[in-house]
Image 1: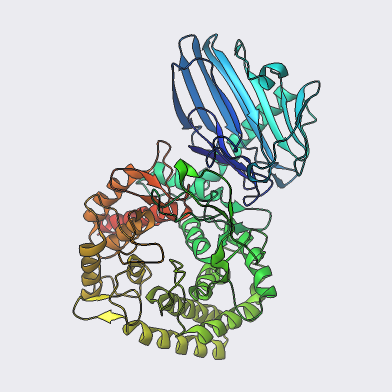
Image 2: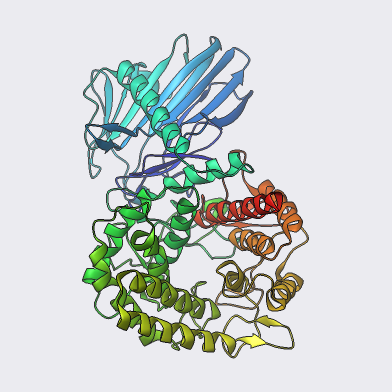
Length: 585
């Protein structure tokens, strides 16, 4: 599938130009189209040749999120251009809840069939459709939904074939309908959206290598920030299983501080900071309303209660349960405090940013530092969100250390001696605890204090500069993890021990990118390049990565997964810096 969006909504479109997944009005709303999780109850919105014999290819207009699905059949060729409008109007970003679909005739007179059957309340509500003069209204949904088109409406309602002898247009709207000339508006919206995305990419810093992959990853990441509030979601999908029959089916349409930290770091790598500025507004509202702690995740509007429930849907490839909501919001994941501090650090310290709220550090930094102090040696569920086990995780301790270091830099900038002293004390205390996770026999840092289990997340000890890149400890740590967690294909397991749902069967893609990043850090640049080249094969035909992968090339887990695209950007940029330094020397 390809993905289009405008930072208000996302739509997933397959190579038959069928909208397989689209939630409105928010990322975490019920789907309007959801055949990704249930072919019968999910509804559909497809544009395809009438006959069964045809070929299709899918591609993006270069440096944009405007998707093209091109069909070749016996009687001609045509392309469906899908666009979620996004442009600057009156000095504001215009991002309507609207999907523009242009059917562009390329050759001949192909026969085409169209169907538009939206659904509400996760498939429970089948709206009544009413034909007007130039649009179809779908009734009984939360907002008015309209399909405005210059195609005979009877053909669409009856799903009847017709000859495509000219370009045609369809505009689906949620809420405010289209009250403007159809063809002119559609063409203008597509043109201006292409310009908007291409201008954003043009303003990006890119290394000389892996540019195409970094560009696509950046465009995918951008789609996952809900610009209205600044919240950043982990993925736009729910319940795509980690592997077949795993029951590891989770709703990722929420804002994890952890995922946001990595996403913002990737944006910073390519010279974009507007996302961080929007994120500050999101996080500041949450911090102001926080009482004694932070949850690991919130909704895109900062809602706390993300009640997890199951839906009566078939599931992707029959994989149940289909979950909405995420029970992880009740967990303790103490790495969040350090992640927020590290994420916000550039706002206070980077001279390129004119951040008008720099005085906010007086409220934000001491409170977050106080939470690090409170939870320093407390066990938690960890970044993998174990549901029946708590430990003092090495990864959490690492972010206690990194968060305290970030707080020290902010305090030093403003000359706050007391805050500097407290930050330094906490960094030293976190370091002492981290040393308790070291296994001298295996010559590595384990998953948590008191366990022998290995964990790919400890690669961050190298990539976050806790371990000296040229030290023997860094070298040994990577080698020990390679022996147990690395696959023949260059993929990397999170861990291999038994957890709440059994033994993992698929690998977590970001772990493989972390591995590449760590290789480059320690000077194994040729190994890093070779492994990154192998990992690129695990994207789909458009360069989009899922959450998990198996050795046969199958994509599993939620899709697209921001973690994976962040990992690619960070690993590629690290390799580029190492190669640049080598060329200079």
